[in-house]
Image (cartoon, rainbow, N blue to C red; front, side, top):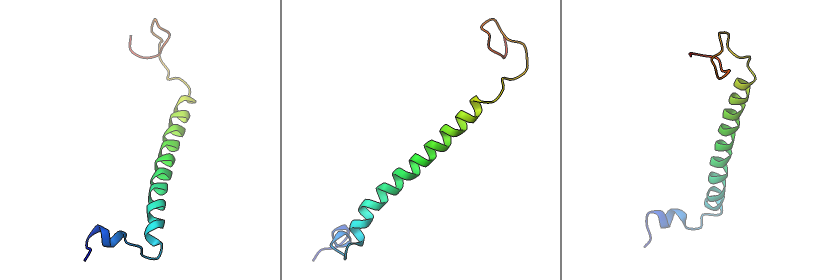
Length: 64
């Protein structure tokens, strides 16, 4: 008699095969969404005006 994971992954009318495809696709989609949000935040930060203050010798703003 089979038990454990073998019994769980035995043919159950198709729902287990759907999960084996849907879960990785869902994980990939969530990772892609997180990466897009992070990239958008970085883009928004680069469009901001430079901070006020004296420039150093390299032309950058901040401590000398």
